[in-house]
Length: 229
Ligand SMILES: [Fe+2]
Image 1 (tube, helix red, strand yellow):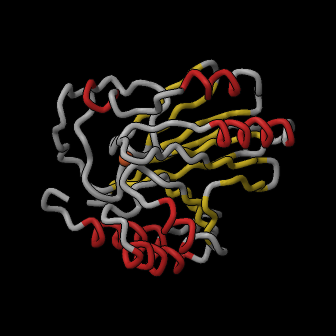
Image 2 (image 1 turned 180 degrees about the vertical axis):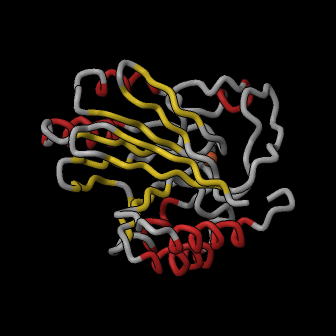
């Protein structure tokens, strides 16, 4: 992508994670895992990340093929969308990909899954993962490509106080804000980054990166960004 070999930077990120002193309990992969919608692309993604030997929660982005993803990444350690409980935390991964639209949307089936899961786990602190940003990033071109029905999302979220954070990809930049007590966190790309607060598409000079999320039993979250030098 624009002069960066995203498969090489992806491999470098996974090697970095594998070399960390503290191993992750799981990986949240927030979409746009492959841009050419090929079976081989997902096989490559799979072969590299399964070396971490931890669950990998995957959701599609606007550049993915949800159909091929669901076929290739639906057996452990991979989970395509859906929810998982880790001790007193629940992770809910929502599909916001819309065919022929780089912006996102939550279909009624996804909203139903969200509401049903939140009602089933009222005592579990909850982290929600999705591809598209549900709040504006302050970047005009990107904000035309966010989640188009975030009102539907927040109508549900606002009724369930166990939701502690929403995290997403898509925007190729880090941010960490709050909305009504819920952390709103974007994560940088394992490839190139986009310049924040820009009205038009401009590449940032920041290197590939990823984000640690430490989910504590009391519902608090610590997070740290790691940039590849
Ligand atoms: Fe995207």
